Length: 588
Image (cartoon, rainbow, N blue to C red):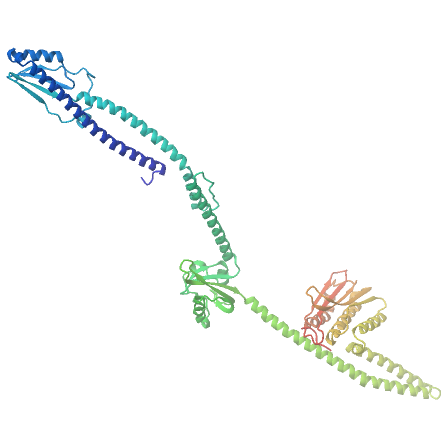
């Protein structure tokens, strides 16, 4: 019965109800028929008995005198069958003298035996005693039973037609009314297969339409939940961070691919095992501390710690953890932990720290070097310069005194004066190389102009243009000397290695894309560029020096060179206004 359709089961129930009603009605009809037949037969028997009694009373003298009841026999023969009663006449010896003829009504037809047994009443014979015999009246209900059978047959066919018609109509109506059930079952079957995008149409029946709307809302909720779960699964599987879930006992229940890559354990090797497998010996208590924190529903965010991989390698990680809460009981049942490998970040921090230390060391060396250059330049200017000046003065005096008296001494004195003048010029050139004193008195702009002008005089074959933009004064001694040294080194390389005919120098103070106050130095020549390795090697130490100077001031240094297209040297140096605290150059 469970495997039968709802439509068939409803039809069976209706059929059983109709059958029960028909049986109950049939019982009532049979009982009523039996009662009616009994009453009819009893009434007929009484009438027949009264008729015979009347006849017997009226004809008693004749009956008593006539032999063998001839008078009564003649009467009975004339009367024949009285209603549904069989009349038999017996003499004083119980010899049958007369029997009523068989009924002619519906002659030859009889009701079924089983029906006769159901409706035939229990009737007894009626006997009239005579002086010379007796008359027995026997009720015969066969015709009444046959009439009842004929009537019930018509009722039966009517009931059967009604039963068939009702079943057909009910079956059709149920099929039409339950048609949405098929669509609902189809939708549920599709959802069972994972087709959560399935939706039901609107139904005419309010009940089924309500079911359809509930189904559609449920399907949409499931679809959204599934999509969210898929997104979360993608996040977990595609995340570059190791995501691990374990219970309050520390047993691992989830292990994503990033965790497998980070620690080397496969999912089947690690799930179910304790998370202490990943902790270093000195951090065994850290796991329990984290679990205790999470039990209190406190988040753990980006704490730096260490874990151990399968091959024994210690991994620096940044760990975050959150409680895993059961949505039904609202109890903490575990911990969701994410770990990010920060080994490279730690190395980068260490390298950055070392770079900063090197930058500071380079800056200190450069500052000390400039101090030494300034000291040497001062000594050359004060000591050697004065000595050369004294020699030149003495030589000039000797030449003046011996011009007429001693031509040889005069000539030697002039040679001494000439050599002294040359030494003086060389010393001043060395002093300018060591320390451009104009920076202390005239500022960066005038110093660069004087230097470029002197360089043009020494290299007239190369066109050199200097362009200064912005407020390049007041940037501090360290930046000034750095800019000067970059221009100096670049022009030295142009003269020695570039084979150029033109060099352009552009010094400007601007705000860059990061809104920093910077000074930008760009030196370009149209020479042959770094066509050969030996030419790059020839300028390598000068380029290294410039790069170190710029980087020591947190600046950026770049060289762009192509064979046959010259060289462009660019330096961008952050400016620190005195007293501003900007992490760049020192003030003068």
